[in-house]
Image (cartoon, rainbow, N blue to C red):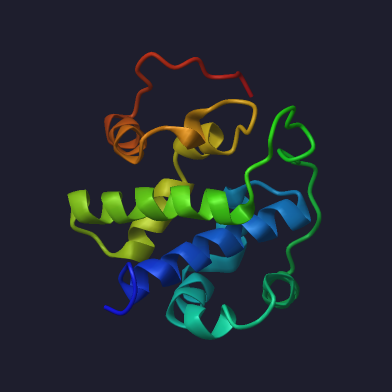
Length: 158
């Protein structure tokens, strides 16, 4: 380990940030982005994140958008935000922490945990930038995911 965190944790951070960047750029939900990318491409991004990180993120995003044919959608959680908009890096960090927690608790691989997280109800909460769920304590977000329910939190109907 060189630096403050494990290299693969940083690779996961980049992977999650790229997924968020692609979703914002194409106006699609994160679920559609991971479905279009598929496990093979996400594993490639994760494995080569240290290389991709040396390029501008919009260049990397454009390459994958074109490769898998992600079309522009109509989901835009950024424009709907009435308050300070978290960056794709901010949200990438939230997803990274949650995925690592799920991987650890369930004793599954990081990529399998990534798919579990992005395919779950938790994305609606994290991606609601008018709410504050993405700012919650990482342990609370993990416990919410694992329990499958939200304790004491108001969820906007989508």
